[in-house]
Image (tube, rainbow, N blue to C red; front, side, top):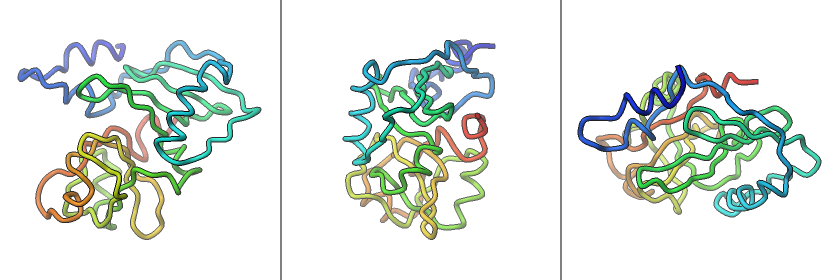
Length: 191
């Protein structure tokens, strides 16, 4: 089954797009994988570098693009490092995958969790605010963020922030981040 089948048939009854942006489907597959020149995706990469305050340094790398369900991905030397997806307002968001954050642990838009949250995140659960112990100050409600463990600063998951950084840290009850990609999912296990 294609990713479009999932999107068209999993829309919630209340017309929200939460099923569209909330999680990754098991039946998604890579389609239309093709080599691409750096100049063709330079604006996308520049936006990502600016948003996360990083330097991707992909000069001389073998670049490919592909579709993965409703997402577009950029492969750098056959590793999926960049994804393009849409938020609830259908605004384009460009972000690193968890493999990308392994190489760029200094990137902005992070939220830190304690060790108690890790097993839940590894199973694809949403991140509850009780486990959040820190957040990068620029995080706003609706932002795509990466979740890292507070001790080793290693990436654990990506998701949509439900609140701003101070609220995520201060609150003790409720959902803080709607998870879309986590360590151990199909995107993580890709070549």
